[in-house]
Amino acid sequence: MKQVKITSGDFCFTGTLLTEEAPETCKVFESMLPLKSSFIHVRWSGEGIWIPYGDLRTGLDYENHTSHPAKGEMLLYPGGISEMEIIMAYGRCCFASQHGQLSGNHFLTITEGLERLEEFGKKVLWEGAQEIEVTLL
Image (cartoon, rainbow, N blue to C red; front, side, top):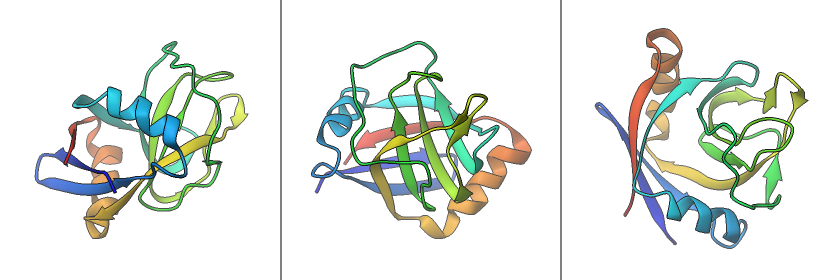
């Protein structure tokens, strides 16, 4: 199993790539690593944080997709009716945009640090964008 490390300040999370369930999405995500960006709070989806990618398209189709990620699940939305993005649920989440409900590819699940994920999500909510770095372990 391939794992990634997500760090932001004193927050550190380890996640497992779902290479069997979402092989193409994992390949695209791995090609983006190391990833340095910022998580911002979602606008329509509930308790989630996201990285917007605008008009970027990777050629991905749907695989292992859901509209209801559980706490610690990350989705990659390949774009279409809304912009391409990566979203991570830190609590109750129903993936949506200004156009309505969306479905994204569940490609990664947080396996370590989950106990601090809600705290991190609320930090993003109340303090604004938080820089992150994602690396392959």
